[in-house]
Amino acid sequence: MEGGGSGHYNPRTVEEVFKDFRGRRAGMIKALTTEVDKFYQQCDPEKENLCLYGFPNESWEVNLPAEEVPPELPEPALGINFARDGMQEKDWLSLVAVHSDAWLLAVAFYFGARFGFDKNDRKRLFNMMNDLPTIFEVVTGVAKKQAREKSTITTNSSNKSKSNAKMPSRQPESQPKSTKTPPPKDDESGDEDEDEHGDALCGACGENYASDEFWICCDVCERWFHGKCVKITPARAEHIKQYKCPACSNKRARV
Image (tube, rainbow, N blue to C red; front, side, top):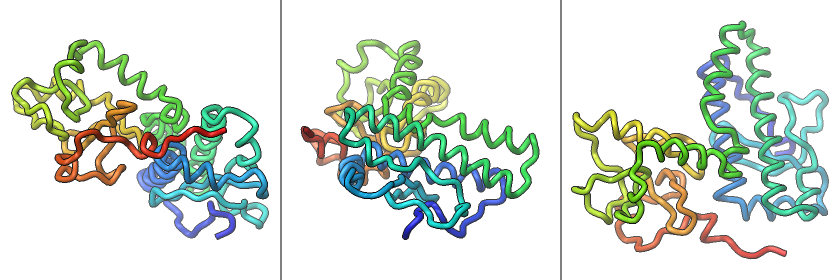
């Protein structure tokens, strides 16, 4: 549909607005990371002003802006396609990411203003959003770098050479080396495991590690992903000798 940011969903509470924010954010992160080839192709500089929209259901769309003025929702940055071939791809993606972060904040606080959030509600909403890495931090790898720097304080520096396990933190020696799922936490080591796992971020959605979720690591770029984000199940992972994430699988030279 034209004006991809429009719709009839109107979250009315802080929790609903944050859920809306997270869904739109996840969709835009997909466009700029795991589905970047598809996004790149849709941003043809020969087309009219195009925008990147994220939706509450974690999908995304490149489309023309809304025709009505003012639009039902704030509009993303216009003309993101025009700069696609005029700068290095990583710089272009980073620039789109920055504008995407600004749009997400605009949409969230638009809902807050529309439904009369007071000072405390606005502050709580911002704090909830600010606890997540920005799209820019995820796309540029800053979030991953920050998590790595924190984890080095508690993680054995020789851990990587000792284990090929598909886990976002140190693996107990008793665990099989080939497992692609996080080890179960026992009562004695639960706090320590939580500290070490807590800084791991999914390369697709940017969310933190959770002990009850299946994770897998790309053997090429060494980024961690929720299995659900890259459509890999624990059963399927057991038959993968070398896992490549969607970005590494589709990576090819561009002129």
